[in-house]
Each structure stands twice: as C-alpha cells, then as structure tokens.
Length: 116
Image 1 (cartoon, rainbow, N blue to C red):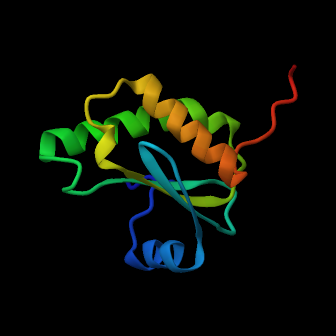
Image 2 (image 1 turned 60 degrees about the vertical axis):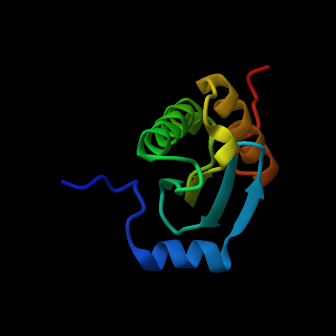
Image 3 (image 1 turned 135 degrees about the horizontal axis):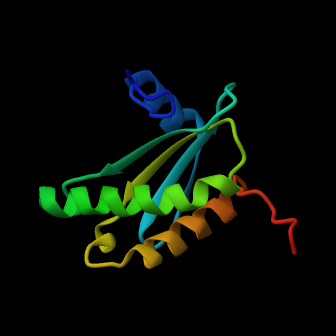
C-alpha cells in the first residue's frame, strides 16, 4: 500500500517546478504549490552534487526527520519538494531543521503560533 502523502508522479513534480514557488536557504531549497487536498504531499531530493550515495541518503534522512518534527505546525493543502544543497553534508539534524524552518517561514506555509 502506497502512502498518499508522498509525491511520486512526474506531472506533479513538473507542475510544482513550473507553476509553484521556491525559497532558498543555506542548506535546503523549498519548492511548493497549493493542491486541492486536505493534506500535504512531500518529496525529499538530493542530487549527485551532494556526494556519493551514502551522503545523499544521509541528507534525505536529515530532511525527513526535520520535516517530521516541523509538519505539525504547517498549513495543509500543499505539495512540497525539499532539495538538499551540497552544503548539507557533515551537519547535525538541528542545523538542517533550522534551515528548513526558516524556509517555511519565508514561504508562509508555517502556521503562526497562537499558544504564547
């Protein structure tokens, strides 16, 4: 059974790249586009510029873990693509999380906190 919140189809990726918006940060790039669903769909990418397969897989794992912690604060109804930059290697998860959080704040996808 496939998870519904993962982007897989080429046409979805193409639509996000062509019609969506992007935000760049020091360690990640965020591409996003509104979808007409009640949940977010995500993809995590790391190109060969990041390094060999071990480093690319580590970059994806870091982004997935950071996103897992951040997703409760997000608006729903977006297609999101996270792309690792080559500066992501040899980082801790906290650094990646800060970079992803800054990208989400810039994009406006992150919900405003009201519990203060």
